[in-house]
Length: 238
Image: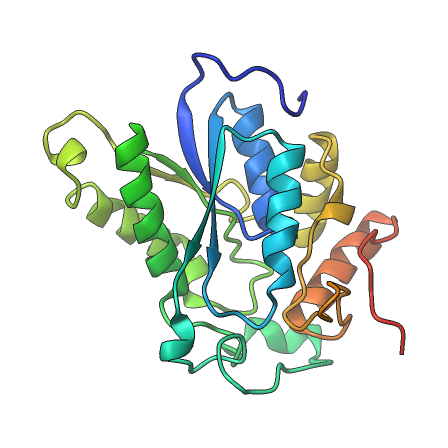
């Protein structure tokens, strides 16, 4: 894949882009698959605002067709360590992450994000939406499961004017959903992704240095270790 190559006459796709490892890889896959990418990022009240800047870096590096940053205030509800004054869990055993849903779960976040993506997709004239969800290394989040994605896609095809008129079929692309973190990293490297651009941490410093101890950091570190390569992310020094 040549990042930033001409996108004239390519089919369009809306890509949810957080600036993290998974969403960046999903963006690379979408472009490699021949889509002109319309990247969509949310400033939703998350404590890790540095990820917005990471998303901007990624969007610029990939020369996406358009990048929108949309404001949503999920702190109005809270209920998550990412949107309320609740401590982010640290140093959890990797085995525990597959068995319970942690307090970093943001209620209905992917449903909210996909709904915005669905609306923008209809306006730009596409039914293709990419999201970097993953069921294997996902901290147990319910809205990262194939059952959820399938149900959302069925609903989406009943929800838009373009779909019910038969002009547009909504397809939710989840290219990473059954991949381990190590496999995702390998695929991204094959596509030329520079993971130094990305920020995966739930509790980074204001400067964007990762904590190295939250679930997201630990899963990322394991993925790089299993590939036998160093993680290029910037981590806090204690």
